[in-house]
Image 1 (spheres, one colour):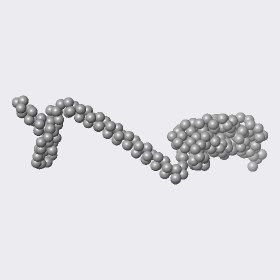
Image 2 (cartoon, one colour):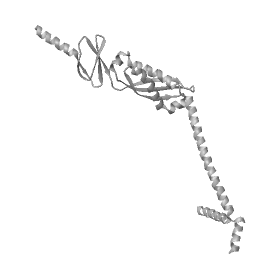
Image 3 (spheres, rainbow, N blue to C red):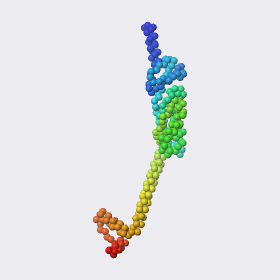
Length: 248
């Protein structure tokens, strides 16, 4: 092989070593002799072989599971809480230069802040306001991660695990509340019914004929439901009938 051919092959190898194709979801951080040089954008890029090297960074939205953390709530209830963090890299250079392992650093930070923030609330507040808790965690995490070129998109509280004895106590409390509500409704209905009966009694006391008509209606209803023999004994009703006959 001639010297020219060797040089051509060597040149092609060197050129191929300097070619970098960056995907749409990536950014390439270029270091020249160990110092940050520039950032490669998606598409065809060329670097200087040997002198420069590239570290690829994925800038898509990522998810980070925060392992369940044991937390003592404000009202001294031990619970386990786990969460998921959605984040993305907005500055590829910072994510490489400012922190050794941004994924591990973000995970440890999320675990620490989860205990600090949620430990300030009692159990009822945690169970009823998980969305609010997530937003508060988001605000707390955003500050430190900005320095690493990472933006936190969302923090979601996935599960709050309470002890079994606390679950039983909560179930009893819920049952007691439902029982109280049921008794209040029943008492209210009885109060309303007693008022109606008192009003009816007052009207009948003022009008004896109304009492007679009510008795007649009651007997009619009894007779319609079943074949019955009704025996009448002298009562105020008999006196009223006698007075009506005398008038006629």
